[in-house]
Image (cartoon, rainbow, N blue to C red; front, side, top):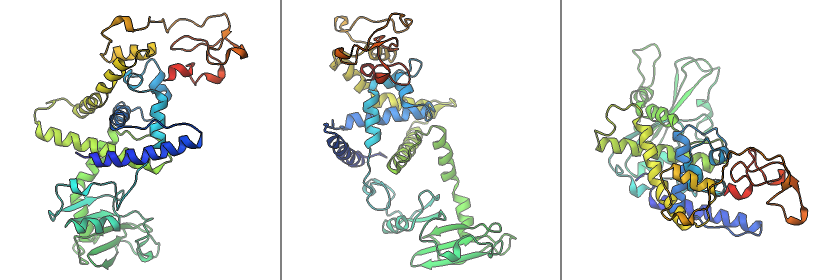
Length: 370
């Protein structure tokens, strides 16, 4: 409901376009992402969030034997990294939003929002749908006049108002050198509470009365956020979309199923884990049945997730992945035979000899990485 088909379609179009461009620059071919694979990517991203693994390196999530087996069982590390690297979003209008899917458009309601979302273009767009907003503005917004910026010259508990058509802006000084700026398309006057010492504007009082939902959402989203450190704004936006959509899905589901996880304190965590399974398990099953020669560590991970091949003849003999490093030096299995490069390090998963050039942070050969 909250990440609609046309949003997925738009993200896939932009991401595949960027993937093809980057691959062509290196003389390679990009394997296009389809909807099924992208939903799997979303599922694994949510899994990292619900396990609070946002600070765990992807290589550790996918390759460490002690991590959740669902990562390596579902998708290769390099493929996941490629999708994450090339995600692109085309923003049309004030936000990544499908206005046709919003059920409360033209309802005349007011929306109280925080400074992550509040902007003049958004207020204008919502007014077209007969919706008003009241929200705080970040100080770096270009729409804020200089007179409303923080200043040591402004007296404590004073307010500056500005009006432009259907929009009202107020700047309130809660303490010397500070200023809180709000934008409203619901208010159209300079109403101030003169009966109190702090003389707060009515806009701020209304915001304080109705902001509970915003604060609660921020708190709940932080608990199981899928956000990872990144310098790319499309990923920051995409992580936020996933967090809010997942929370909204849980809220709607529990509203319709009042007896869901009754009395369980971690019901939302369990809900997200079930959601992850629905997003990845069918793909994992197809991967198991459709790939005849999967690496042993991948089939083992699938078994730990509850999947096993029906025909035992198609599986390869299992290898003891915990065997000790052999003392005898052998030739690297990745390097060309002509190099005859002897090594004493071994892949932790398939136990094949691998040189420094082809191993990762943990001793894993490139073949097992997929």
